[in-house]
Length: 336
Image (cartoon, rainbow, N blue to C red; front, side):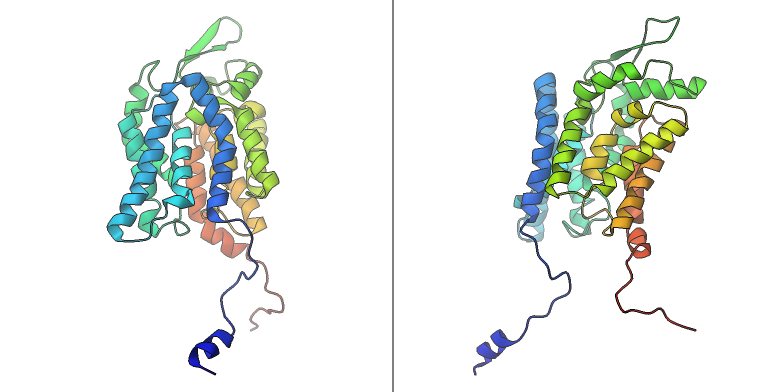
């Protein structure tokens, strides 16, 4: 037997898992992009070129950064796996529609260059790349976004129904108004139930992806039904936000629909690389995200905390995986 035949006959040894699935990385990424397509198209339909410009800036800067990095480092090109496309799309959906395009481009570069490629590429990053880009923008240019007067930082201002004595309360977003109310009197000073329909179907006052909670829920259900994401993270995340909001005396439905909870729970917290591997760990991870999100929202200085909640829990994923590692069959603990 020749040496080549001997090598062919030898068994191939590899680490687990040994059961493979027909899904590829590209297919998974494109499924998530497809699930986000309805809310993306709805934002373009209602906001026009404002949405198109932001989407183009984020996606092109993310994909371009990965292409340039691989070219300079002389690595095989990985832009066809769809991860950079998805990162750019998620970053755009997490930003106010009128974010200056140069800021959006900077966010796309940081998302891929700093949060992904510097760690070694897809599968090695500790934090969700899109959220790192969002956090970078919030820290570096929060003042620039805040100074954008209507119609500046957001697509337009908002008038919400007020309680007795006032016809309306005007502000940038519903969460901003809610945060101001909580700081002043410890309760929402407007009719939260009247906000359900706008938040579900046409919310033009938040980030690009907040335009329709119903379309985000629909996309999330598609991913769960398709087996792309595990139901444990979004259910525990959203459930924790709702329960704690009710416990603190604020409207739980409004708390779930307003802000980035739905986008974060279905499309960001469920990222394979930056979420726990074990079922129990995923439940703990989702509960942790929801706890930090609602506590920071109600008692922190900013009206929204989805970005920081998920990033904080991303950092705890290795510990969560270690603590929830299932017992190996036949293994006994050390005695004495």
